[in-house]
Length: 109
Image 1 (spheres, rainbow, N blue to C red):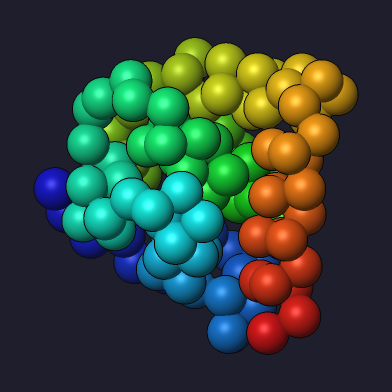
Image 2: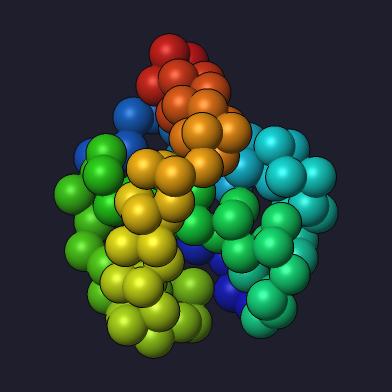
């Protein structure tokens, strides 16, 4: 798997590179960073990928297709992930709290 250049996603603050975002999501879900984008349906991996994708989409004006192509996924997969996470935020309070902690940690650094 190829590495992602932090300049692929315009608008990222200097302290929050893609690597920083991925590392923080992996810490929350206890997933190894080098296996984050591995194609699996295990919940911790999926939710960590969702957090990274959702953060890039919301805070960096990245299109869903650019996020998907950077990680070798189809654009419809990113569309599904972002919509699914928004739905889960309405029903799963614990997941929403995890995301808020994740987001606050990245935006305050």
